Amino acid sequence: MAVPPSAFLARAFPPTTIILNHVGGPLGIGPYADKKQETFAAWQAGIAELGKCQNVVIKLGGLGMLFGMFDFHTRETPPYIETCIAAFGADRGMFEGNFPPDGVSSS
Image (cartoon, rainbow, N blue to C red):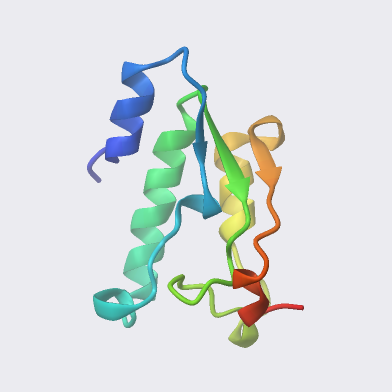
């Protein structure tokens, strides 16, 4: 897998804190709509690479937006939050509330 451009940026500016919003925002619409496994694999590899950059923190939220690939209404256990925590650790993850956009898929 190629190194995500955001990892190059993080490595170029190590003293700068970078906040990755909405768990990195994997897309699930348009040309990505029927490629959920492929998209997840690429996203997971990118998250693991960014997790190595100590100046990057991740916001754990935004999972209910329509452009995402988060089909929570059809799944029992979405692996996105666990993947992010495994890559960044609890010290570099922060929960975000993303309402009203997340209201499409949750109350």
